[in-house]
Amino acid sequence: MASLTEDNLRVDKWLWAVRVFKTRSQAAEACKKGKILIDDKSVKPSRIIKIGEIVKVKRLPVVYSFKVKGLLAKRQSAQIVVDFVEDVTPAEEKMKLEQNLTVFVQRDRGDGRPTKKERRDIEKLDFYEDIEF
Image (cartoon, rainbow, N blue to C red; front, side):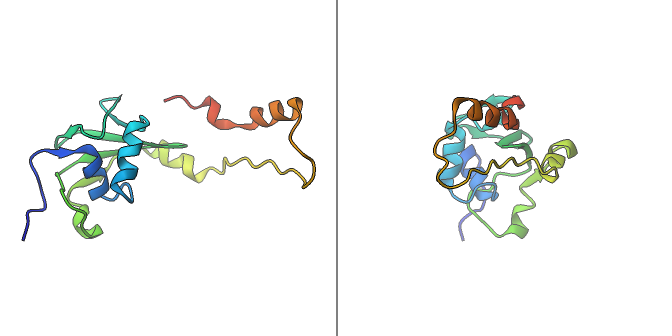
């Protein structure tokens, strides 16, 4: 049986193996878009990850934090993954999920495109503009 762990492991592979992302390509894409941070710096998918590092994953409106407890090379069952990752996301971040901050602007069918004034009013409702990363 092949070993489950490796000495040098890419961050995209680790994120996939510990089930933060469904596919490895999604993990790599998140790295490329700057949504994965280590030491508050965005990282490339090929960055070698080390035990003890804190990996932050931006998924609006929450920034999740995971501590690397082990280097898992292959995707395993959820019971095994617990030994390789620890969720250290602050409670304030998790509270953002509980708040119902979704804004939906309904337009009647046939109203056409919003006018300039209507568009500005819609943009005022957008709460993502105020969040800085």
